[in-house]
Image (cartoon, rainbow, N blue to C red; front, side, top):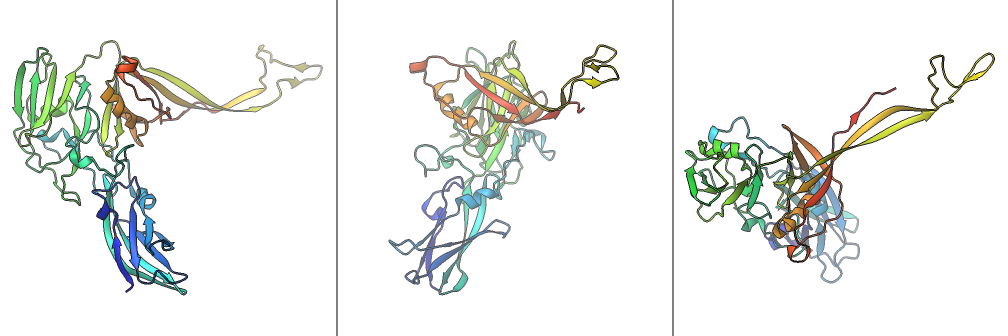
Length: 406
């Protein structure tokens, strides 16, 4: 065998992102042959071959370099949005919604086999390996530094939010084990502690570790209903101004604070979107929202008159004029203009993830509707030079409807 060594993407990177380059590097004793090529076969987690690539050696060192990122990205699925606890969840697990799996949700396994092609002979699978990459998006700075392992809450937003007493508030986090117990502290407007309650039981979901031995990601709901169900206690009432969510047996975890906000005259709309860590975040638009409608019409032309015995008529006996343009089909597309109340600088730094998110749902009524952000650019904002500024976006509801067909 002439493949003497190879390097996997996760040999050089700590928890690599499949939304970035995934370089596999091979070394062969035969790389000096005139027509030599490395053969890279990439397989998904089920053993299905996704691609075969033949790559010439790099002229400077004879090694073969293949970027598997564009291939592995095709294995990712974004349709696992789960806004409610599964039916199998216990009463004290309602805030614990979903664990994205390793076969295309939070990340993906892939295997590779390396061979050689030279002198008209192709030899396959001379070396092989297994690798894993997360569904993370790379930031502008520190491209190859994976910060997800450093965070408990899987979000780049500040660890506070505003919500009413009825809406869900989705946030991702890293799982810490089957003995995880939620702890909730409530406070009044003066900052006085009202309650300090810990859930009576531990979460009983399947606990797995990721391929790097770290805790798994979990989608959570920190809304009032889910939190009170989890701690089995009704403590978030009209006297509560805000509450902190933490974990009894993880004292170093920074609390996530939810401020209770009255909606006033506007009906807020929450956007639940996949953030840079591959988890669903919540962006709350609590000011005026405007619904608009675009109509797509299809039509054809015809003459607007009729031939009769002694004349050419342009209207019938009821004085209804003939039309020359027939609108025979109409499709309706709805849009919203949403407004968020004065985000902070830290929130503006985070909200760009909403603009670039691949999967977004709007919570409207009792449903969750897939939407698309209309904007294709984003301007960061700082109060030191721009003062207070609301955040406005336009969304398209991905729910086309058809009207009467003539």
